[in-house]
Image 1 (cartoon, helix red, strand yellow):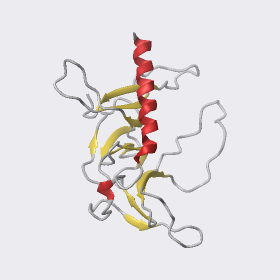
Image 2: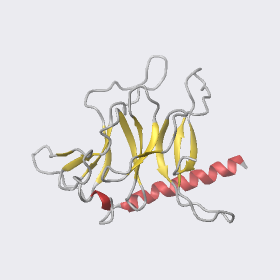
Image 3: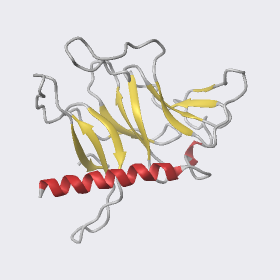
Length: 205
C-alpha cells in the first residue's frame, strides 16, 4: 500500500511539473502587473550585455544567487558542495527588463514555484543563517506572506499539487509536496541526513 501511495504521489508531481510549462501567457502572474504595489518589493532594471532591456515573453519567477565562483565537484569526504542557495533571493523578472524582489526579509530564499492560476508563489526560505529551511507562500506583488512548514527540519523544492478531494470530505483542498530531512535518518555516509518526499495541505496540516 505504501509503494502504491508513493507511486501515485510521484505521478501527481510529474503531472504538476508538466503543467508548469502551460502557465505562460497573458494570465501568468496577473497580480504582478504593478510591481510597486507593495512597499517591500524592491524594483530595479536589468539590461542585457549590449545595454538593451532583456526580451522575455512573459514575467519569470527566478532565484538570484550571490555572485562569485563556486568550486566544482565534491568535498574531500565525498559529500556535495555547500548549498549554492545560501544568500539567494527570489525575484520576478519582467519582459521590459525590470526585476522585483519578493524576499527582502530573508537571509536566503530559493526554489520558487508558481501556482496554476499565477496568483501565489511557493518558495523555501531562511530568515537568518541559523534557521532551518521552511516553505513559505507569497503573492506575486510581495503581499500575503505566510509560513507553511514549522521548523521540523529543512524543507526544500516545494511543489503545488492538483486539488484533492475524497468522498467523505466536505470540499476539495489544496495540497503541496516538498523534499525534507525531517525524518532525521542517516545515510550510507553516517550522520549525513537522508531526504524524502513529503506532502501536506497548504495550511501546513
